[in-house]
Every structure is written in structure tokens, then in C-alpha cells.
View 1 (tube, rainbow, N blue to C red):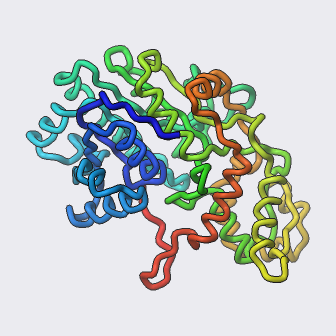
View 2: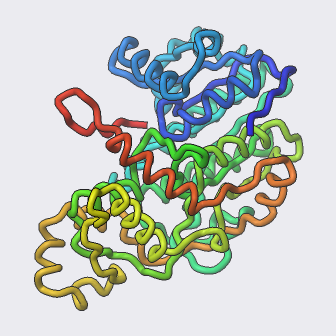
View 3: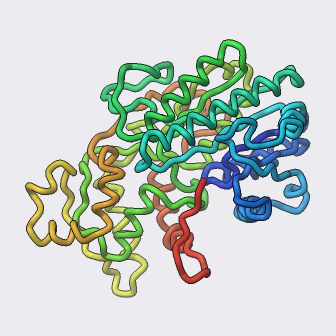
Length: 393
């Protein structure tokens, strides 16, 4: 659903515009607020490289020339003090900024904690300092902060939107660094108008399946297509929380315009009741692969084991192939998310959004479309040398 608010004017600072979620938010932001300007903070070794990355994001978003004219490049690094900008440029940008959408983050689960903190905590510190400066020039300034539902860490039971520090352990440095960053955001909430969004695992846009970053589910799909998944290391009955990118973007834009959303946190998640289990997900995956082959046969579907049971239950040949497969590296990264499900409390948020005309799309249908899009797009493969390029957010 497309919304237009003719009265919203001013500059929006958008971080993460070249990332997966930012690539979906940018066109929606411009079309909802046709009088706004967007300053996209983009990293790059040179201004030319940063401009090229932003151009790719605008191409992906299908921006018309008039929309592209409203997007300006801010070449900098969100993790640095003042974003690495000269003080006068930083102050000038803050003076005209009415909104910040902070989406930039490192989502590399394998980074050491210090590296994750440098990306996610330092960027939050820099954004909060910018917000403090921007408030001097705008009475209706707002910060829209994208966290993650996985700040919950490794906990069972219902996970509430009003919970953060519950003494939880974390599965990786990404979760912990996002938790520490969100702590700093809430410490600023007494003086800074802000809203926190916690999406779960983002999949493609629900109407087309399109997506810019092929991480998580798509990495398993890629191995399955190539016949390089000798076993499925997942709890067949566990339901991972997958949420379409457009639902997250439209929810944020709606809540940004709601006064009652200030000071609140929203789980932009599907919830267990709307989430297919791994047995169903991988069934759809292999069904789609079969439908693409002339003989109607998908690559052989491997047996599924809980990750902790793999060594004990797999055959010697399955284990041999597993240890030679890239799947072993994926299991190291995603093991915790394949073994158990997490129950994010999102009923009130979903009800509020549905009443505003933003219902949660059918997750299974979106996943099927996402699968088709990824296969058609060859997982983002580019012509340059035929190599798959995994771009930074």
C-alpha cells in the first residue's frame, strides 16, 4: 500500500540507504512525502565510489528523475564522530534535518564482538550526537531507530516489546552489539523523541519477492540449487520468524507519523502463528527447484536433523559430504537460528498496523516469491567476471 502525506517537508537523514532494507525504504519514503529531501549517508573509499553505490540503490528502487533529484549524497561513515564530516558540514546538515532513519548496521554474525561494537554501537553513538544537534533547529525532530528482534538473545517464552535487559546470553556479537546499542538509545529517550523498531529475519518484498541482499535463507537456497546441501541441519518443527521487507518499511513510515509511537518499541515480526516451520519452508524450496527443471526433479532432498544430532544420526557418507560442503560454514553462522524458535510478542503491533491498512502479508506466499526472485536474479550475480558480489550494507 502506498501512502502520501503532502504536508511533510524538510530533510531526512537516511543511513543504510544502500542496504537491503534501506533500498526498500528509500522509494517509499520519497513517495509518501513528496516534499521531503533525503540526505543519504553512504560509505565509500572515494566520493565517486559512494555515489556509485547510491546510484545502484536508486536504480533498484526504480526512482524517477524527479525523485532522484530529491536525494543527495552525504559521503561519510556513520560509525565515526560527526560521521567523518567537517564540523561545519555536519552542523549544516543537522540544522535542516527533521527526521533520521537509522538503518545502517553490520549484520555479519561471524565478526568478533569488538568489530560488531565498532560498527553498531559506535554508529548509534554518532547518530545520537547528531540527533541532539538536530533538535536545536527543529521542534518536531524524530529519530527512527532500527534495532533487531534478536536483542532478546537466547531466551525462551514470550519475548515482549517492553523488554530489553533480562540478563540474557547472546548467540553472536551481532546480537550483543545491537543490544548494547539499543541500551544507549533508551538512555536518550528521556530527552529525544524516538521510536525503536525490531524486525526479525527480513525476506523479499511480498508482492514481487525482490530483495537486494541474499543472506540467511537465500544462502541455503543457493546451496540446495547447486546440490551442495547433503543434510539439513535444522529442527524440522521449529518456526523461524520471517517478515517481508515491505511490511517493515510501511510500518516504520506509518509509525513515524504517529505521535503515540514516540518512546515506544515495536516488534516488526510475523509471530509464531504466522510462521511456517522448517519442514514446510524447505519443502517449498525443493518444490520450486523441481518446477524449474524440465524433468520435474529437484536436487535430491537431504534428510533433516537437529543441528546437535547431526554427528550422531547422519550416515558416514552424509557426514563426509557435509564436512566438504560450504554448508558446514553456514551451520557455524546460523546454528542457533536453526535449532530453536523465538516467540516475539507482536499481536498488539500487528493489530494497530492492520487497522491502519498495513496487514502482515502471507509469509509463506512471500517466501515462495522470494525464492523465485532469488533464482531468477541468480542471487545478485553480476557480469563482472561472473563472480557473486556480496556487498556491504
